Amino acid sequence: MSQGFELKKVTPHCGAEVLGIDLSQPLDAGAAAALQSALAQNCVLFFRNQKMSPEQHKALGRRFGELHLHPAWPRLVEGHPEIMEIYADDKSKRVAGEDWHSDVSCDPEPPLGTILHMHEVPPVGGDTLFASMYAAWDALSAPMQRFLEGMSAIHDGEYVYRGRYEGALEEGKVYPKSEHPVVRTHPVSGRKALFVNRTFTTRIVQLARHESDAVLGMLLEHLERPEFQCRFQWQPGSVAFWDNRCAQHHAMWDYYPNRRRGLRVTIRGDRPYFRP
Ligand code: SIN
Image (cartoon, rainbow, N blue to C red; front, side, top):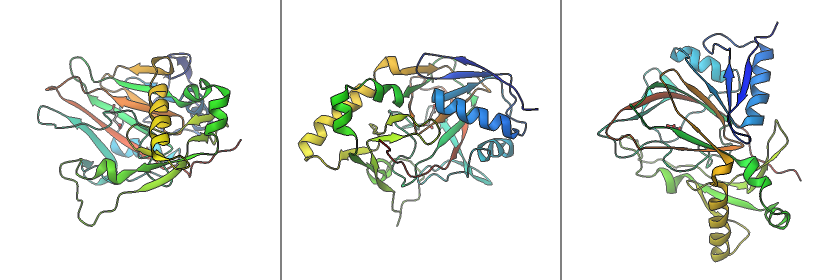
């Protein structure tokens, strides 16, 4: 029998809380398939009061695909290069994910999803915002959708990562840069999702520079509209599992000088495509 769970939607477009599942236990095939489908529908899943060792965290991620190695992040858990430590305190100069983005969208095959397990939270603040890129796409007018279908955009890691993180080993390093469709078809749900973001996307390939700046600017403002979003207040033991193919997120760094610490595994994805 499959491990059962309940889903409670957070907002109409984005996010669902998953009740009645212990992520430290191996997921059976039925539960993994049901979670994969819930993820593709809701863009991000939230879990409370979870306890996972690094091995259990990696085993959970591997239920959905191979684990991804980040091209730049310098804080990795010793002995676990697949686990990123998300950390900020009074000495931090920046934090991960401070602006809207889809993780490492500069990769030729950007990550499918990310599982962040929060261990330490500030007294208040440090929420993460998520936004549905299905909702952002659906809300564009039909003429604008027709204009954008078939266009592609550059996602540039060099521009984002070079010099960004203290402690990153950069000598001889080449950061990924890729061209992806502006609107992608989600491989599980079959829905269309807008796939440009403020952090990585530098231009739309088919347009002149001034046209690209204007259209990209409009899209970035559009996709950040609050009606596409939900906001997650972390507690120690909370887990968020987001789908980078249809969601963007933004970590709030409003808790300085307090500390916040979590561990993250990222699951490898496939090459984005558009199917009309
Ligand atoms: C990230 O992985 O982009 C950071 C998310 C967060 O710290 O909430």
